Length: 126
View 1 (cartoon, rainbow, N blue to C red):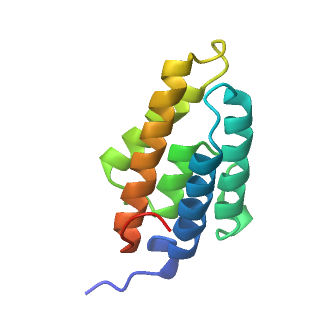
View 2: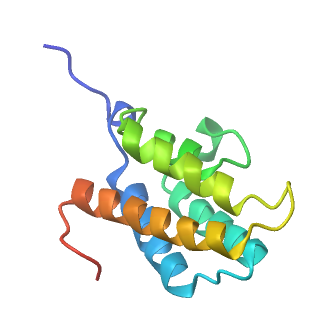
C-alpha cells in the first residue's frame, strides 16, 4: 500500500479559508461592481493560498486553479467548472458584465460555497 505524502492530500486549512472567504464575498457581493468583486476574490484567494508554501505556486492563480491546488488536483469536475463559470461571468476584460451576468455569478458563487461546505462536512452557511 502506498503511503500518501502530506503534499499529495487536499489542503483542508486552505479549503476552509477559501470557503470562509467566498462566504464573505457572497455576503458583500455587488451586482453593479464587477471590479470590486474581482478584487475581493483575489484577496480571498491570497488568504487561502497562505496555507501552501509559496515556492510551490505560480503567481496570480485564478479561482479554479486555486481550488485545483488546494484539493491536490482532486477537486470534482463540477466544482472546477463552476469556478471557471464564475470567473467568466465576472470577467471585466471584455467590458463590464451585465447585471444579469452578475446575478448569475452570485448564484454560481453560492453553489461553489455549498460544494465546499459539503466537502468540509458543514451543513449550510455559518
